[in-house]
Image (cartoon, rainbow over all chains, first blue to last red; front, top):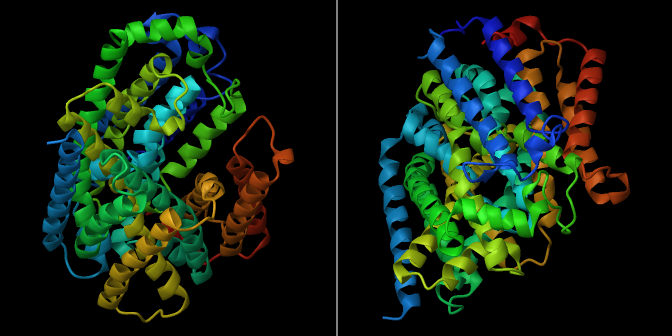
Length: 77
Length: 488
């Protein structure tokens, strides 16, 4: 395994994005709007409060996947 | 044949299959600690994904998750949040830890800290914190397994016997095959649990309410407070946002530094494998969703079930399902218990010998001798947890509440070790000790608590303050030595 080759700046940006994503799961962002933390409206049969949490999980997965696919690395040994 | 006999036979068949998979996996690793503890650093993506994932499908998730949704509604969403974000920090620090592990031969978490800070006392402190968190968790997994057998046999088999049989199987394959046995049994168990979770998660709302949508519609009419975040507290009143948010926070900070997760970094075949595992990990939140749906399905159909953690077995055994389906459910519940228990007992033994005994008492201990001791310590740790599970009157609830609070204290120390050149051994030890003490004090003194914020959060605050201030007040470490870690 050689040393890290990914640009540290892009990794830091990713870290900031995930810090924001983390904040979005907790107070004060999650309860900011009744639209996010209440039972209604229903989306695909699920309460919006649950859809919001599941949506953040999906965003988290897509972000990591996109970053992983978009970076070429020399540290994969 | 009586239904309970069919259920019992399916459960025993599952145990036999787990034992076979576990024992057959052992021959693939070398004889030393690198083979027994880190699988010769050769675990591929599929196995690593299931090892990490199956560990979160603990007895708490499989039985407690539905219990939370059933009794506290939207409060259970916190489980989904921390599952999707909990391993993300490992995407950042994991590759660095893996490189250091290969370069210096680490197989445990504390070995990295002890080397970085030249401190065997730090190693022993981390071993102590890890064990204090591990034993209550392991004990609960054993109790969960015992209850499953008791339900399966309609009370004919006592809890102590069910726990003994299940964990005899676990100890056998962990003793013989180490991390390779855990890896392959967890893959088998993980697939079983996913299939069962989604099967029951879709079927039960359909059977009881005509579907997931109608179930939530009825629930929103009858008990709207359950579906509005942050859900209900333990007493049935509204939970506070402080309680919900701090539960997410402490779980996210603690998740990736649990020693039995952290040690799997060393077991990855490559850094790419490790990164890909972390990338895929948030998908486990979607596998936990049906677990919560099961709990929601019972709210209106089975009111007043106590204890709430029995809602899933209550529903499954009340619907007149075929005995083989009930048996598969019981196998799934055992898989949840075993897939966490095996990783914990294995990590606890490795930590005790490598980070405690070797660091403090016998530094010259040879590699093969360490492996031999770790194997027997697996049995000893299992015996201690079994004693607490079936014989001790000591309440584990407090220790369990403290577990995540304790483990989360390792997070600032790890960040400092890998990213902050100025951190010093005394600063890190001081931060860990103060963080744990504050967590304990805030747990024991309800008058200090505010907005139901998790005591571990106050511990983290104190930890960081002490770590930074004491590190700045104590002499720098050798820059050449520190550079090996912060630029790895």
